[in-house]
Image 1: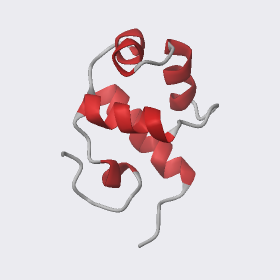
Image 2 (image 1 turned 180 degrees about the horizontal axis):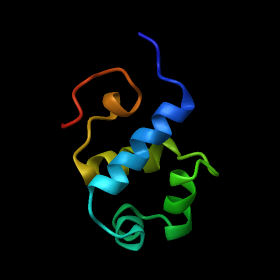
Image 3 (image 1 turned 30 degrees about the vertical axis):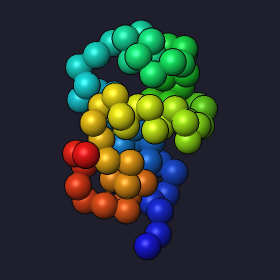
Image 4 (image 1 turned 60 degrees about the horizontal axis):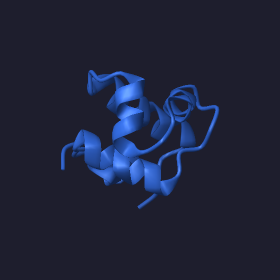
Length: 76
């Protein structure tokens, strides 16, 4: 199985953030990063770390395999 291109991963990260209906500040606080980091993921300016992606997936109840394009099932 092949991991999706980087822009697909970031589009899915954007969807997770948007669909959470939480502010960037709230998301950042909950997953232990700065609001600037969350913002930079949305604009693809910075790479999201594996650890931050795992925490974001847990926080948003999202299947990490969906983010990577390895599954069609988004929910955990």
